[in-house]
Length: 536
Image (cartoon, rainbow, N blue to C red):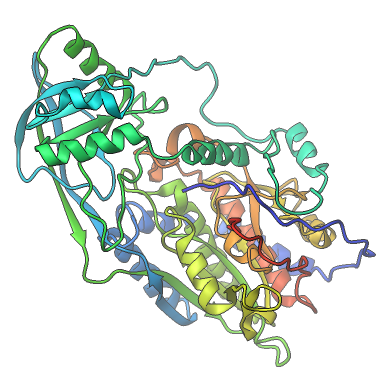
């Protein structure tokens, strides 16, 4: 799941004198040695992906992975480890069987995936295809009474476009320099387009724009009519679905009261266009289809996994430094780059700290979230119950709990397998010099770019949205947007081991610096919520 902030709160640069950070260079060397030369990150990633399968929120795979995390954190000696409820999510969903093949005019097995929270076929069905040519809802009237027992396909071919660009990419020095030189946006609200050199933010911005177009009313009405008349399924595709890579997400509502969604199968454009050409040429196209799905409705709560290393300084132990990423994924792959990578490196950062026997002054807490793909739900629920929430009945617009004042910072990873190239300040100019000094002993691992820019679509927004310092690191894009993000190719083999080692090492170093610092990280001014604006 990705969303881009359209309304942001960014403070003006704070005219503060730079202060020298007490960076323990010797400890940085120990962290680097453990993180690079004795890493366990790929073993952790294996258990989160291959060993447990996909981790759609409230699915069986999610709870297998959550229990693995809980057991592992307990074995490492963390305290207060829990699979922690954050509020109501909705129905769990698992895919138990999926088969789709053309049987006439010839046999051809198809690579196809049902969208999440769709119903099944209730056994093997044989069906003919029916092409739907409808520009608006009125056009659908001509198909009434024709849908029973059919598999539907919209008369919307998607042209295959050759690409001469590599799938994988890294930031150039020029791009990073441009990000570093970005100026803070003044004021609040308004339309904030992404920095064109920030490829991750650009991707999320485009996806958000597509979503803001709203549901296609014609397709929604067609699905309703199809279900009423007894059609079997509808076929879908998109311009990115080619060369065996299918980008597949949700097929509709998942709340307790939401009905079972009509079966929507995603195909590659090559197969989709083949079926469409045959049918429009007058050649009958017949399918065998057998899809079995399972809904979990006994427990509608959503759950995060939480654990911590207790602080040891009598004056600072109640303050918290937090790291995290989302544990949930979509269902066609095993969520390796989105976001087993983030979960694995955060667990590895905790392992490094425990292995080195570090006694942090502040408490270090890890949170692995669920429901991120549906809107940062797990982290938002955790923040709401732990630190506070927007409340217009309060003088400052928020209901804040004592833990809000005791919080230092949150660091997030959720941009795939690419190594860290720097960090987004999220408009918090007062942290620039601090982070620049923290990056100095890590220059052999990263450029250490620090940009005032904000980035959206990750769980740091849940913290930032209530005035808590929350940060996402800048990561190389790799093949995230082109190949793995929300696709059937998001699997273990697309992880970069060296990059993940680097990420975990840098995170561990930042966590150490934040936990040992004499004071909490500085905060932006907490502005009153804008009525009707999405904070995160």
